[in-house]
Image (cartoon, rainbow, N blue to C red; front, side, top):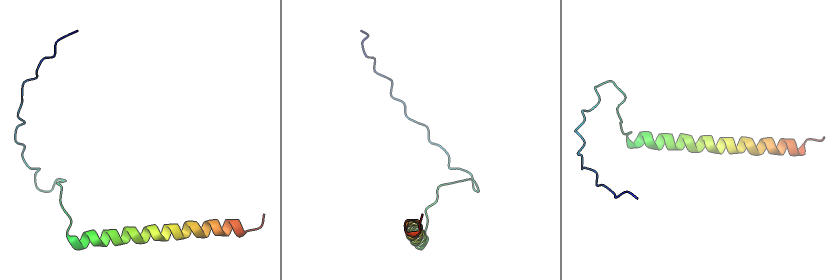
Amino acid sequence: MTTPVTAPAATPEVSDSPPEGRLAPQSLSTPAVRRVQRVSLGAGIALIGLGLGFLAFHLRRPN
């Protein structure tokens, strides 16, 4: 068995911000977030409706 050795502590260097025009993390405004949530909810409800309609059509159709 080997004895454990403590690792030396290292402090990371300060990094610069990405230059302007590059992909930098940005937060969305509150109205934009609400709009995205509404679109996602509407799309989900529409897809569920289409799926239920598809199942109903295929279950009702005669062989």
